[in-house]
Amino acid sequence: MPAMALSRVAARAVESGPDGQNLAPGAWHRLEALPDPRSPQGRIYPLACLIAIALCAFTAAGNDRFTAVGQWIKRAGQADLARLHAPWDPIAGRYRAPDEKTIRVVLDRLDPRALARALLGPRPSGRQSSSGPAPASVRGYRARRAAQRARTLARARLRAVAVDGKTSRGARRADGTRVHLLGVAEHGGRLLDHLEVDVKHNETSHFTELLEPLDLNDAVVTFDALHTVRANLDWLVREKQAHYIAVVKQNQPLLHARIKALPWPQVPAGSVTRETGHGRTETRTVKAAHVSGLDFPHACQALKITRWRKDTAAGKVSRETAYAVTSLTSADASSQDLNRLVREHWSIEVHHHIRDTTFGEDNSTSRTSNGPANLATIRAAVIAATKDAGYLHVPEGRRDHTTPAETLHLHGLD
Image (tube, rainbow, N blue to C red; front, top):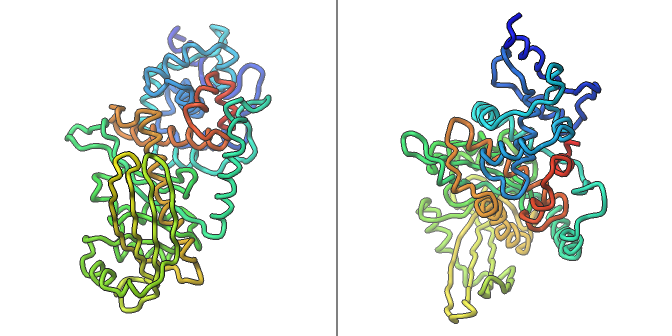
């Protein structure tokens, strides 16, 4: 047998090292179940191993590019490679480490929906970011974290998800178009799924494709005015047994005119909230009224949302008025509930902001095939795992997890 062939056979992917360990259930099992896009001939590294390496490397602070992933795995010791289930080479007597190109090619070819289901699925609760006491950066936030949990409990009566798109501005295709992803996330929680669409204006044609796999029974779906499309919202209520809050702007001129013409001065304010932060004071007033004859699928109430903002430094005051319709009745949700649901739609924007500022997603130039979507999935998985571990700020969680042992435990892969 030729020497090259002997080396390849010797380094054939063995998902356990010489000690014969098996893959742990749960997260490892989901990675192992991913459809491998590579030809069976000549495979050296298990697909689960390559995805775990990419996930762990991107978790560590400062590793935001494929070149950094290659550097990270080169620094890994033999014990680290064993934890990552790297293949054992009996001829060399060591575990083999893949190079950057191997990981890049796999992520370019891998089915993005399959990876999203594997990495963005439910996680076991109660995991800590390390086997010992919680890091000081986590312990210092316990009181604020308790307040977040209280707000989460308040959401329990009305489960809500937000739909929104995000453009990866640095990832341009050969024809000059940018990579655009349409995602769905829990209010105040993790990204559930996303898919690539051609351009932003094509988001509405992928609305049902994105939400079809999700269990949305009795959930409230929020989105911006772009998705206020009759056919999609009729499908959402009839097929998914869900509710919606749809912002109405001039892209629905007749509906907007009808809602705007309602006798709003006669409607009492159902909810008034005042918040101070980010250099401004904001007062939000929500009015809700049961209406008929709006000629919009399953619409039960119309909403008028007025926002007064005062710049605390310049003293400038601005006013903004928005209108919306919802399939929720007053028995389903109070005015306070509606105010909270409309306000919390921004949580998906926060998730997008974290991917841009912490991971530099807008500056990433990776654009080949499925690479941009799969990298976005990995970044979303890191954000979710860091938040689940108790961190309020993702950068601190990344700085606390730099070694393979720490990152594997964070993601439930130990």
